[in-house]
Length: 242
Image (cartoon, rainbow, N blue to C red; front, side, top):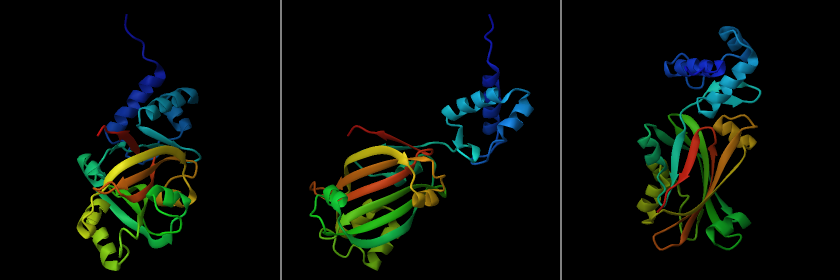
């Protein structure tokens, strides 16, 4: 007996094929439910079922209040012992770069002092950067570094090296002869904050991934406490066994 394919699944197949053929481009808004219902001569409930199917498959994203859009391919990022952001994106055919947002000295509050395992109020350097994949903003990362361990960290010549290297790991190795090893990472989900929403080009109701990490040097000493906010619609994190 021939299998009967539901109408909504047939519509999803057609829309999926349109996406593959480039009829709809990544980031482009899909026609409204009403227009699609007219196009396929079905009711809007059937269109909603087709859209839900494609959303679950990762082909579509729904921005509440704005509409349904063609989703970009999910970026898989491994959480392992080494910090390899640039290499991970390159391996997936993506061009990565960072834009410095903030570079400043501040004193460690309770969260920073706990993360860096230093006394409350000690001076630290904050490096906050916006990360891009093929010129699309995908992450905002704040790294806190103890200035007692890294004197002159914020000197213009060192910031210039950091910008040229586009890599915290390579910067620490070149300037301080310091390794950059991930000790732990804690991942959670939350709604995007207003400033991050602007940087990441997201609506305010969009969930993001929050990754808090502690990194150490070759002697096991904590050298960085990091807080990275990642686009939940673009990034997929998985943990590697060391």
